[in-house]
Image (cartoon, rainbow, N blue to C red; front, side):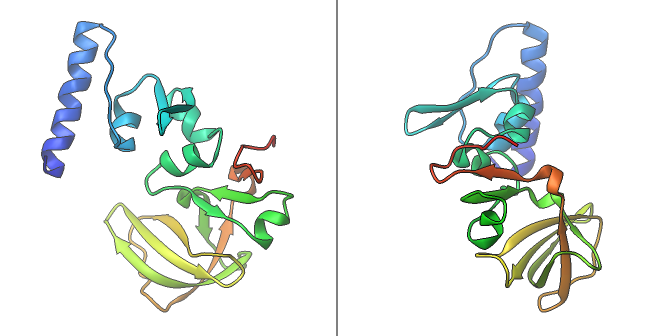
Length: 171
């Protein structure tokens, strides 16, 4: 289905579910569909249940790296190396919307790509201090282009820490 028809189909399925008041099972690999249609999501990985919960429970507290990388669009940034080790973790997770563009931010970076969507601007930023580029979601239209230098400030209250086995660590 094209994008517009997919959205219309989701709206119709949600309406049907509400009107019927029946239990429905909807199987999808599309996490946006799962997040928008579900009261409860069962995340499967190779036939194994990784986590069960409401869409927001999975979004706010992913049980492991698989769920963290699956739920959310764009996906959660998963950072290893020194930045995670500073927090006694193997991997640090931070969602793109929880990283702000801020003068005096803790991560200096360079814009690699900039996607202008009107209501949001999605940036891919290379940060020398990190093991890989990060995705940043900035509200509105931000006039940044590839090559521009930026400072990033991750929200410590929104960081997710994972151990070497990929499991969520207690905050």
